[in-house]
Length: 474
Image (cartoon, rainbow, N blue to C red; front, side, top):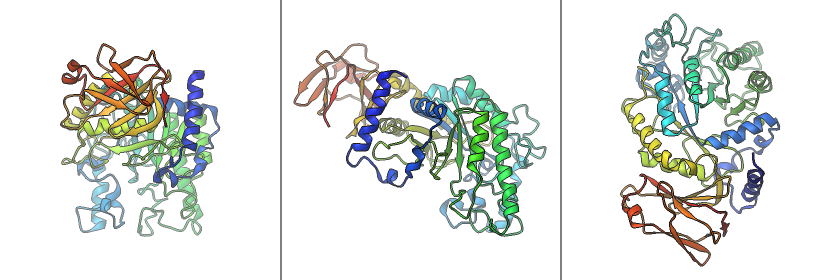
């Protein structure tokens, strides 16, 4: 890291602390002890992570055959995401578990997935190795409820160890690798013991009365994470979901210190994301399906679906490419990463509409990627339809988010808080020549040439670059 960037990080951090009202409602609810990580290798990995900006998440399992929400339909809570297609709960759960027998994604080709994600400009992947239902998309020795068990239709396929195949394909393309793992396991008899009913998502017995059962679950969890940390190549992120499994909630203590020690002994510098728990094992925060109003004072990532559902549904409503590009720009301008989820089909394809979105995002990123990668927030972050990022060399990107019907660029762009140096050049990314600009008051007016206005270099958003360090008027 350059001295310039280090100084910039310190200044940005101080600004975020001192800036009035800089904490959003979302950040105000987060515990501050998540900032206590001291391992130099982890801190270095977090800096690397913040440069990536854009990642792919995938929720996938036998449930995709029904086109239903992942896992939650077997949870008996009275919530909209727990709806079932059968009235009889017991019969539904039995049928759900039998989906393992018929799960046979014969079109599974992770190299094609990696190619599509790479073209889109994504830099890391987070894959669901196991969701709450307990079905393992990796070769585990702890349970037969897995993709490689002889009872699964796909087990004889050469690519049956799906997690290993995905990690290998994406790693070849230079991606950072993240393993999503659910701490709760509704299939495990050590979490939902079959002797008792389970009224909600939590462990269904008293841990105080039955510590022997819970001890087995703690060991089961440790063993499965150990498998992922030792048999699947270099792992960058352990993305733990199911935040209700924590010591403060019904004493659901899975001994995170022991898990972290083991995992980092196998994967030095591993980023651990113990979601919604706080503490030193939540190295970064993960706002779900939302974008904070302002930059947060810690490392963070918005995880969000491309459609409405995390898992595949045949009639899902996908966001437009314009919406996705605008979300990416807005998140990056506030200092976050964008982890975009796509649910693969039961056959093993990515849905055609998702592939089209990735292609169009990639077209945009080829022009504007330098305004996204390795950037950091700069005041005022967001104003009207403009978003701002700063490179490690001090250049400022002003990204204009165009309206859906806006195919011609405006003749002038006014920045009333930015004072360029006298010898600054102003560029439009994707346009070959510097643009004219004029000082006015405490700001600048950028003049957009007629040829660029009528033939923009890309769709969805346009990036103007002030190439010399500029004074920001707060």
